[in-house]
Image (tube, rainbow, N blue to C red; front, side, top):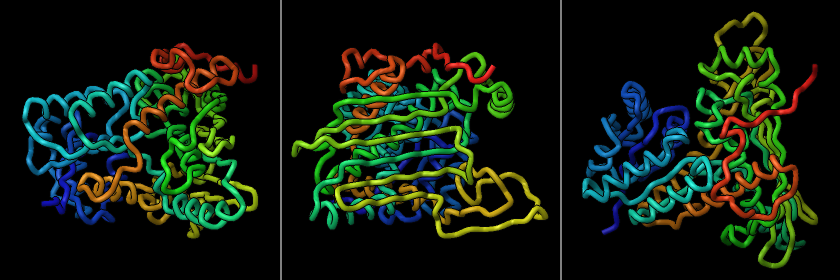
Length: 417
């Protein structure tokens, strides 16, 4: 008998987990039933948040093993910090191999790990446990991306030829938590944090709907990284004040990255993906954008072209918030509003998809194998940036490569005197 509902437990209780819980309002055949975090108060708060959203009768667990052991939990959503990825997966697998519980699947947030060696270990552990696995890349599931891609391929590509250039960008003013800014903990800077989105989005757009990503193979990668804002002396001080323990005068991470990926298609074409990411963007808030171009057509999406705008004069006073858009930068003036970010950014659609996968109703569009290949592209991009040249993909020795940013050895060029 096929299961009709899925009980889901979350590892992680922060910003990302709560975005998924918001998206869960559009998931009909699963319930958020559990949360574990190393901080018990945060776990309890996230469980209450899920309950308030009415997306499941969630409770906090004392350990990952206890959550896995509960018969009500059928799948795990991994949304914790990068540096805990292997530890968290190891605890899940240990519980399963000791017979403490059963799971149908595990879904993991981006990036799959901090480097190739860790990504391979995470993938190995999950496969050893015999779990179905899904790689959570929300922007691939964003409705504007999916609708635009489907129409471009059905109308433009079908009559005039496949697309040849895709662009994607994610830009905002910087992450919420200190560990994101720490190269050793996070695995790098903005390239590792956000290029995982953009590099996969351009490949997705260039892939014909219904065909696997393997039909569009990465062949050569060129990348650049820079610190444009946060190593300037005045911003080093601001960052240190805002993010405890972060000193970009001593151990900086890049706040801008750009990558060009040359792909080879299975029908013999060379096509290009251009991706850029920034923690130094000044605007209304988070801006996601993508483009797809072909012989006689194009598409474009910008998340800040949301259709709804508010205006507040100087007389409207209030504390800083994110009630208009993620990473909001102002509380007065003319500002765009993203009315339902969990839908607009793709969280709802990806959660619904992977729930259906773990219930046996669909085949995963993205697996840990895809997540591993994304990490391989990211590490190749870092190596390209460090060496100042284009690299064939994958370059030799990639499994052992660790970015200079992650090692605390990166020194950006000085700006000004």
